[in-house]
Length: 232
Image 1 (cartoon, rainbow, N blue to C red):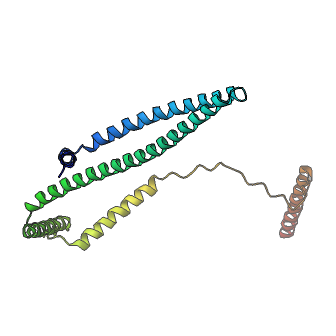
Image 2 (cartoon, rainbow, N blue to C red):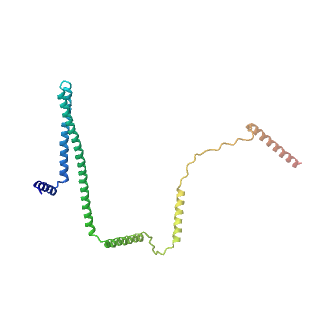
Image 3 (cartoon, rainbow, N blue to C red):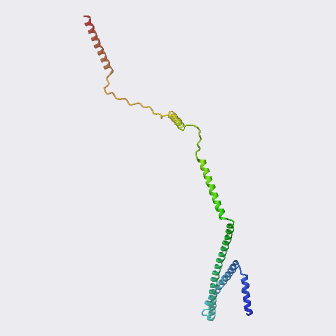
């Protein structure tokens, strides 16, 4: 193997051993993009100057005008190459960013998997089943205790429930009567009924007196006649 081949082989091996980190590679690519963007701006300005120079010489100095156009063409070719290079670098940078993101996601998922494995190593399925059974039994016991407390307690007091109900009804009736007695009726305003009109026409008082006097005289005459007849 030639010395030149050994040199390139050694260079490749050293680069493989000291591979740059994704952050370093991304920083280098951004620097390259900034440099090419500046070069692109410079070439655009040069192209505008060469175009102005070609227009200036025009028909007066065709040779100078042609030289300016040639330089313009070369500059445009370089500008096209830089555009292609920028597109390639941009694609490479995006791919590297995605790869770096995927690497970080994979690393974090690996950490999480190891943590879950470490947690599960301290767990026994049989112990978990026993624990769940104990919890279920304790819940059943607590439910039975709650139901026992909520049930009605029956005490042997020796009283007849029917008599107590009858006495309760009497008390309720007395209370109802008392409320009815204390209840005040609403005040009704007094009103007099209209007088019935007399069906017979009223007569003057002097007519009544004359009739009464004549009836008394008739009675006196009858009495006198009966007395005379008895005397004879």
